[in-house]
Length: 218
Image 1 (cartoon, rainbow, N blue to C red):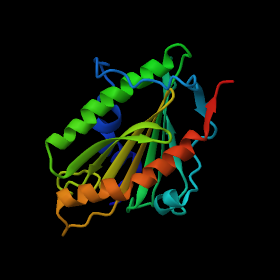
Image 2: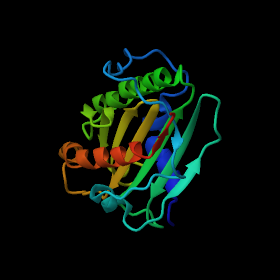
Image 3: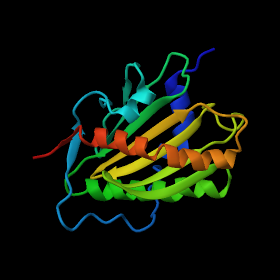
Image 4: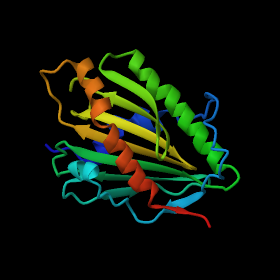
């Protein structure tokens, strides 16, 4: 029986994208904004889903049509989820999730808090499994953290190797989740390290495309 992408997306990213959102506990010091220029304030996305056309993205989107889910807009934020996958959800495929915080005076701070909570929670997962690796990065789009999950299918509900890159872009959290076919004969720890190295450029390229399609307030 084929599995729908919303089911796999929920299972794969419950911790990575939403697990730390409830409660909004105090986390590490916020990521500072650049003093050289006032950060942009984004109010939405130019389309229902991002348009991904870079060579790095096309390997994961293929000819698949984007499927989007927009959660009901809240007072302080809205969430957009989009996926590009085959009918049977065979890797490679990609999901992106956007959290757009609203309120010119508070949105950036709220996004920073969410980002730092996720950074603390998600990168700590590497302490409990040698098949999970995490790193913090500075990207052209903003500060980011990346988590590679190469756990076996028995403990990995998506049935695929995954790389999740979360980037703070102004008052928007951009999460890119890449799914790759698993290689059963490869050491899981080695595979996680390879995923971090091999898909760094892909995560950056997709994030940059999305950032270019955010609507800024003039």
